[in-house]
Image (cartoon, rainbow, N blue to C red; front, top):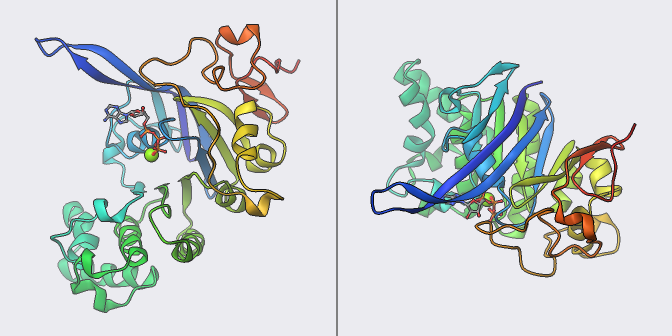
Length: 313
Ligand SMILES: Nc1ncnc2c1ncn2[C@@H]1O[C@H](COP(=O)(O)OP(=O)(O)OP(=O)(O)O)[C@@H](O)[C@H]1O
Ligand SMILES: [Mg+2]
């Protein structure tokens, strides 16, 4: 297994005493466990605030986990920020690319920090990678504001790939782009995955992309896994009422129209999440037992957190 995450938790301090001691925490992740096979695409879906980006930021070393363990190639990964094998592409290239730096500087930066190859070799690697993301060398002297949205995201991808990662975390890589450009970037990502033998963790709101591209899918709600398994099973035979609601909230007929979801009712505040099942306030099938917190149970080739289902014996 390329990546194994066990009981990952994250709490953010949100209120402090006059002495600066945290007095209130927001729990963004509750004991999240999953595995990512080498060469596969693992999708993470869920509404806003479900903890998707928090997972991405912990895996790429931007945030420190509050609990749990990460294993990379079955070895404990104590400090993900030191592991160059894992790189991240952010949602919005406008905020992730430094507007004061040229493309050449931005793409080369990781190599400069790494300082393992000569200046000449760095230039060659930068040019190679810029071409492989479908840009020409003319962009090297340009600044981000001189590029289109799609070109900027190509630069962001090049910046991550120049470090020769094994695992790329794509946090909504196309959601800031025009619809026409989204498909081009997705096609590019598929092509790059083959060429560089990459593994992807793909965070997206777009179930159509999940359905087309990914091997496994994890459905998150308020920091907890609701359902996790093979994409085929999750999309075509969802078990959890939340997964069903996500799928029902997208245009019909057929899965070709799967797109961004929006389910009815407000997501509860993560500062004051419902006791018991987190989805109980919006679930059409809620019953008495949902006052108790459901465990994640193994069922029908996947794991589901819902009292409607019992562990298979
Ligand atoms: N640095 C932070 N400090 C305090 N709270 C945070 C911080 N980062 C994230 N959170 C909170 O943690 C929860 C999960 O946030 P996260 O960004 O992981 O959600 P998400 O699933 O990526 O949502 P979206 O689809 O909107 O990107 C949210 O309630 C968010 O407000
Ligand atoms: Mg996010």
